[in-house]
Length: 230
Image (cartoon, rainbow, N blue to C red; front, top):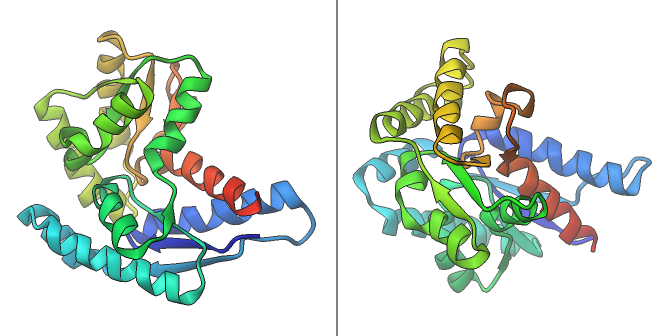
């Protein structure tokens, strides 16, 4: 089994779920008392969130590369970035560490294509929804068209993610707001919804939405388990 290296703490609420999913995935495939052979380097998210608001992605790259190097020195065979938004640093980490990484959008795209879906709605932080690093990955690498909510909805989603979900607060009112946004995306032609933030699956489940929902955290963890076991 390959050793999984997870950059966590982005936020720790979702890192907790990653750890559970990785271990459950290995147990499901190998049975018995098997569990994931993994390392986690959990960063302090407070300074990183501040750097995001400042637009200082160069410093974020530096911090995440350092985290990945800790995992490399610890014996990780490959790296997961436990956050959709932080995949903005994917290329920097790969280049500066020489490590293999599994891209969360690639894991999602495989499932989207298996479902024969060509157009999806994307929910996430405003950095993921508005930036090109995530949408272009789906479009250019996988031929999947991406639509995003209107600006006011993007601001609302971003606020809920950082002020509530990253703090472990799950509100029924916020859930209803998310579902209303999802319904508008479906009316605009989305055939499925990508939960492009690893905290959103804590609030929104497939049972809440009639259309296919793609839990990027779950798909990312499953891809890591598959790669680790080989």
